[in-house]
Image (cartoon, rainbow, N blue to C red; front, side):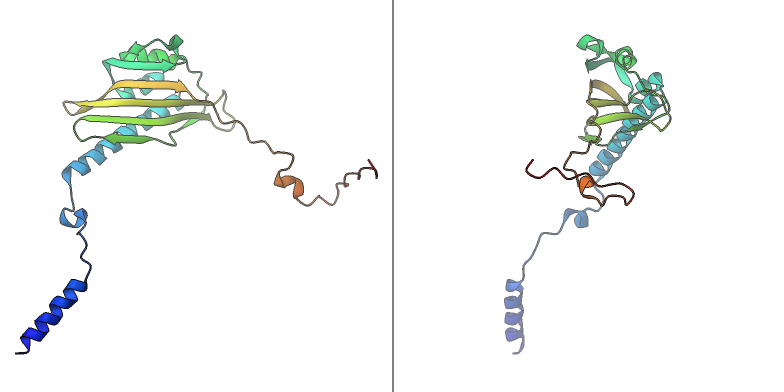
Length: 199
């Protein structure tokens, strides 16, 4: 006899609960396709990083090898080789030959983004900065770079790449009204003379 009121109370309490969908990660803690895509993206990010590091060493041949372009890879260099399209490893090497790389440099890819679709195609985009260390020679180089990789027989090969020179950010300069002007004046530095009255 007591089961009916208890059951009714339980159903009433259940109806007041908010039931949310169980997240996919709890239902399928390891999605093979997602894991594979992430591993592919990490591999390609490492290769783009190796490209920049090779440029920092001044080793253009190693930079070409890091990307692994196919013989028919389309190389577009805006501001390089009069903007004419090049192809394959030789085309990429011709574009890189135009760079005046600093010595004793380090490389950065501050905004590198890589995406793989899980079906053998991936793309990337980044700035590549080659910056001389303190005491190093030459001027910094900053490139905009994007490209497409295809996977062939388990090997990722570059099939298209675009490079263009990016302007280096100008050095920071203080405006006349910058906060530095409001800092306390050193005690050994005389104050500026006040302008004459009525001037």
